[in-house]
Image (cartoon, rainbow, N blue to C red; front, side, top):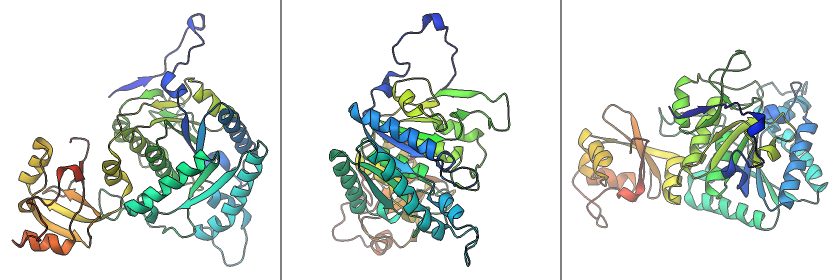
Length: 394
């Protein structure tokens, strides 16, 4: 496991050079602010934390950087504001979001205006990532806002988003993002961000939960974050937020594969944004990998699968070992109702997820083809290799 733990530096040997020069070079930054950073235990807004972060962002914008903020906190804030309201229970997430979002954005506008900056509210749902056109439209809007010097503030639109979430490893209809961690990672990867800074209530990634274990070891750098998942239990976060450390690691993988480096750090420190961008060893740093082409990245992470193709062992070997396209003869089962342009999961004979594919044919055409009646427009292969993304053993 390529994990680098904290290194104790001799003060006599320190220099003014940044300890993380790649982080210090970041010009476009996505900051994800967790609920535990923005909302106090009693549900009130942590105004001082928000103000400190905005002050740092404003100072760094004057130095030539640009920022996209992905902000949690609306649901927790709304719950506190509606406490005791008639007809609303503690789990009325959509109603809480509807009230809290306006108050949260109002505070962002106020704090940014103090520094002569304008912010833009951008609420998104899973459907904005289902089709490539909507996905690209969102990306273009964010690019236009940044060019105009506006600070976009994004949030999952909980007012209309469905509460049910499904894990991709068990069902083809899993959500694109089930919390703002993944949303931030997708935005960072597809808006050409240099850095995703995830601010939470702990000082980075540890081998054990530092809230309950005094001798937990901190990771200063993690090269292969997927290996950390093996040691992390399911963490559902607090009663105010959905994301735990598992969510943050999974989201870091999305950003990393998309060519964006990640730092996970504590948002409780007032100057954390500036310290991170000065290249200080704050939090846990996850270096970027070479970015995938845009379409393959969308297939892998952004699109909601609409069906499943179950493959035989020969097809799986051909995909993994030969880099082949998918032929209809290798398909042993077809599930779901997909159309041309949809993404489907690819599973092996044991039902394990091996990758995803962008379909050039509808489910009816695929069924007909597998029964020996190929569509007139077909050209030998069912899915071209360029439109297949395999899991890490590709």
